[in-house]
Length: 186
Length: 100
Picture 1 (spheres, rainbow over the protein chains, first blue to last red):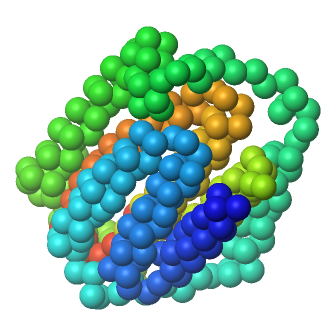
Picture 2: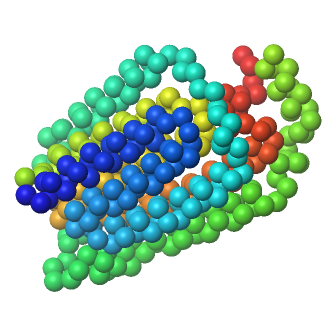
Picture 3: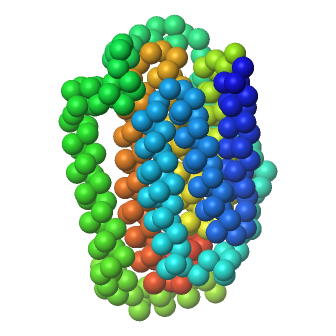
């Protein structure tokens, strides 16, 4: 009973928040709505018994990623709106509808789901974070290390792209490039 | 009673919202936001499958997706800052330099 109430509440709020994110003209409102939606998604994870995933969702998304977006937006002039004119609105909704149809077909396909067996079953007698740790540090140790290296590379890339004078000299010559751009936009 | 299909349907709806965002918006920042929505929708699906089949692999995939999303944001925002310093706009249409 409570599970059903919580599920419908979380799903309604998440869908509304993400719709605001996608439709809002103001980038700041979009970011706030996105943060709220992320918190609600962590509610889904708690509901599903994935406690550790829910905590990671709150810490990483609403803590780190949203703060990064907030700091990143200080570099941009977000009050000056990007002019948005959808050239073919019908095509957009047609494509989205087709993708939705494909997704529903994929999810309701009964052939595959009958043959699914648990490779790494949930360990009995331990809490969710402990079970995650057992599987993560035995079966998924190599992907874990690769993910660590990937995060390091991303950190270095972010620092260098934002901090060094990357906007002045790259392989392209900036002046010629800008001139070309002006000519093209006429 | 909430079944696996409920969670998968919510996941699909959120994925479609993200797709509409990717197709529709011209602001580069909103493009990144829509990508986050896509990744989160998939995460819900993984966690739901993980619970209803009693397998932890789904949750671990969700962790790796979160790691990928975090690094994507770091690199993507860095690239956008460089782009904004060069061109002064975040319009997707400003990114074409070839006019065919």
